[in-house]
Image (cartoon, rainbow, N blue to C red):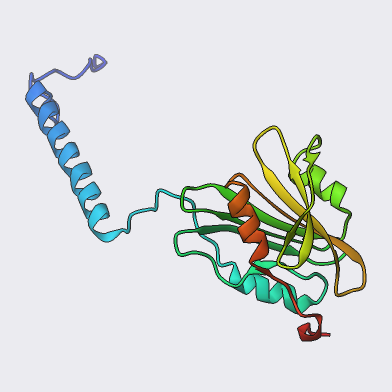
Length: 198
């Protein structure tokens, strides 16, 4: 009967990889060089991301919303080059609404809202539940109600006759200052119901 084999005899040779602090430092340097090379290539071939807000294509939204023939879709003919349109959203039936939001050159907000609703509800939703009404003003031949809130928002609102024959409301609100909000409201253009697709 033969004796069972014992554990293999150790030869004293190191394993496959040499483990030393010099090897570790070398691997670290190679890793740093690879990451640095990747970042360099990325900066050369990928465009920088803008730091500011992302602009949206608002003019096609205006055309599409006006073609629906439900709302007047107030919007300016153009925006100053240093302003950024940040939202342009139209929702059709059953609860049609329109919203265009912009940031001025100094990143102050102005938004225009429209929906088939009364002014008080629109002001409560978009300005403040406790908004205070001021004296009415005339802009571009139209009478606008003035609303303000404790947060510094200034708003203008007026009733409109929608293309579908219902009463709607338009609201312009912002933190860009009273004069700029008034100028923006006066610049708004509206859909011609005769141009809407039936």
